[in-house]
Length: 150
Image 1: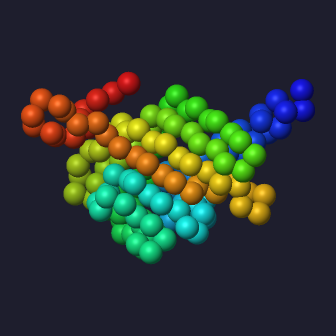
Image 2 (image 1 turned 120 degrees about the horizontal axis):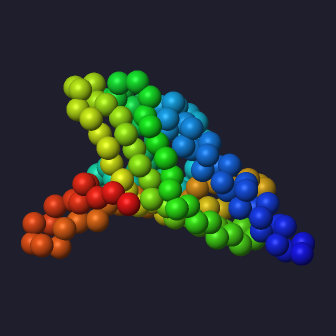
């Protein structure tokens, strides 16, 4: 019974990190987002290039620049979140939705897939690996399938 309670507690702690991350996204709070990551994280996110690392980070300045391209807050949700935990490593995956209006008035409504890898560092869960993606149409066009909805 202790193992189950421990696992449940660790899942709750990871969910709290994800909730804090999502709240920071909604508020366009770059510091709040950056604080959820391990210092040596790897990101495979929607923005180019193919990979961000400790030596080539997508950090606070990049987030602030991106956030400034939107009017008002960003609507952000996680759906179908699944969390798996170990003693000091965990991962989760979900379908995520981001809705916002750009400063040019364009409406953004995007569903994408996300997997996060966590490491427990000094007793705290931190995001060590982030992978976000959209599928592409395999009809020869290779266009991103940004029109999909769950």
